[in-house]
Image (tube, rainbow, N blue to C red; front, side, top):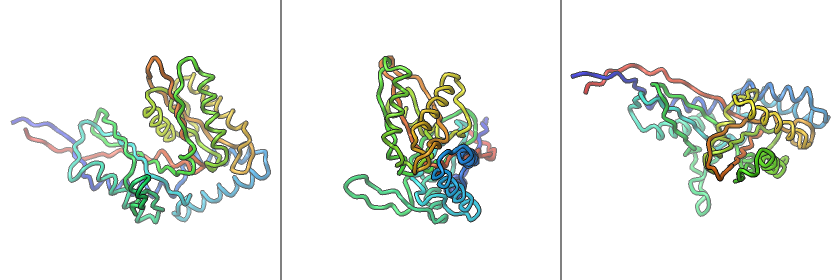
Length: 295
């Protein structure tokens, strides 16, 4: 009998890794966001805004040095999985392993558990921050990439979707984004980071806006037209005067856009706002062991 070679990965490794990522995401503000806050402090024109940014930066440093949550709202856990089609996961179910990791991380890390089991009629806390919101994508190869994005709801509640039509065009997109931002105002704990999804369907645009938040804030969309739109919207948001919570010139640290093909009759625009605790870009590539599978 011949054989094929696969990589095997034990589900327990996934659980342990997700647990660690949850703790690290809560404790350590990503370097790009930390540097964005310091840059904002240098350019902030409002004395009150300067004082607020000083406290935000100090808080990030204390959290990092003492392994404590950067914000008391440690979020609902969004997890993006990129699973290589040649990877074989053994010893358990993939989503169960991820949720076990969330529960372990939030319990061991003394992170706030914020998930209720049902949204309207029985809002009982699940006591371990599960289930997470899990998105799985099958990709070529034999590795697993995990990105954990804890999402606080002070900012999540202020996002929105606008189902535009093609005639609305570029100016319509800008108007839609700014309407959502102005409605959010100071409520999302600015300076904010804004993820935007353009195209697809209503649900796909929303997911793309979440994916956009996993990018570094000092990155740009590779398509020049969207890169320019990111810069234009960042400038418009910083001109609103929302500032760092109490007014000022540093309203937004970054705007990231992801886009996708859409219907001839549609132009969906989704905006996800994140507060200054923009926890993102925590990913891992597994190098699993080779095993011989006989058939």
